[in-house]
Image (cartoon, rainbow, N blue to C red; front, side, top):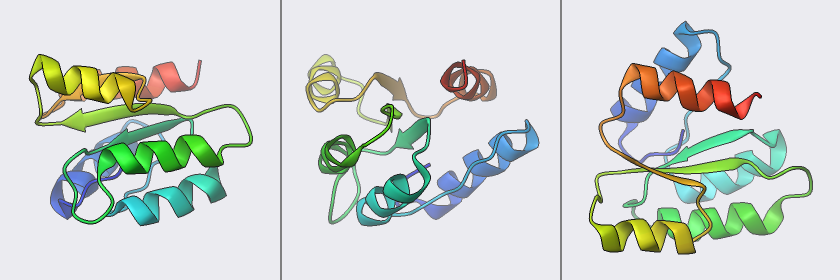
Length: 115
């Protein structure tokens, strides 16, 4: 989970942990790229509007450094216009999910990543 809103990121990680998934939170694009290289996650939930390296740049960096099977990149964002969806798709994300995400949808994304 990548979001500069620490409370939001930590809450989603706690929910995933409670449902039996191994999850962690980072709070910047730079941290996300470094951790993705180390852990090779199957799923990355990534906020778009972050200071410094935004979600689009972070996604491009993660995609550019992968050696193994690509992570599933999900834009988890408050940006919900059709133009935002087009930008998300062109940036290499697999899915666009609007904030706030529900528990059911969060677990479904995690389960799908491990199939």
